[in-house]
Figure (spheres, rainbow, N blue to C red):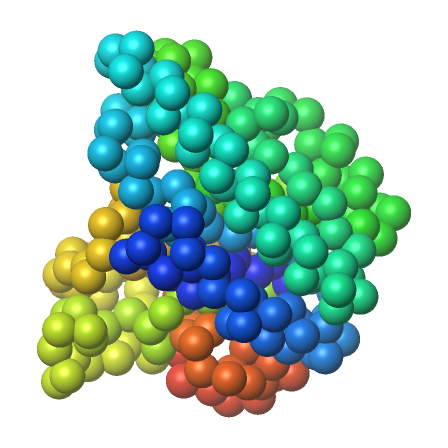
Length: 257
């Protein structure tokens, strides 16, 4: 089974509030279907979550009651985004169902806790794809906090029998500087912990869950045994399909935990 994270930077325009990239998502779902692979999908919140989450500092926990309407609005927005993803998957012949983290799980000082994985394993066993996403989740210490798609990826990597992990973003992989601002940025084809320590933490958009460096840290943690962890550009047509067919593509591969 392959675990795929559809990043918020690909499925939405993160510079515009609630802008869904319909054509891109439809194409990516078709590429997944055409690959014939058995997959599980997690997606980011993109502009459906990050804009209000940053404005009201929701990842900082419950500080004042002015945040409460924002929590409700973000939860509504990311569920609507999830419904768009579910729709595209079902249209492409991949039976999928929503599993909202904020309704199923708990956080403890920003650490995701999945105490019962029966729902996830049960749907997988039936041949139905559970689709999880970045969400606002109750936090035992902070009141609430942000559960990122990357955190969910790590948990699913422990719960399910995953042979390969793919993070689909809007860049070709990990660079030594931001390729959107520096045309001479160097792409790392392979990354380990030592290389990651030297990479600058730069980003072109607001991201309350850490950006590409934190994503690579998650990828390194997900590496175990023979499991591959790969970061690719989902905006390039056919690249995800090629990777799923085990063809050589431009990407960054995480090496070692």
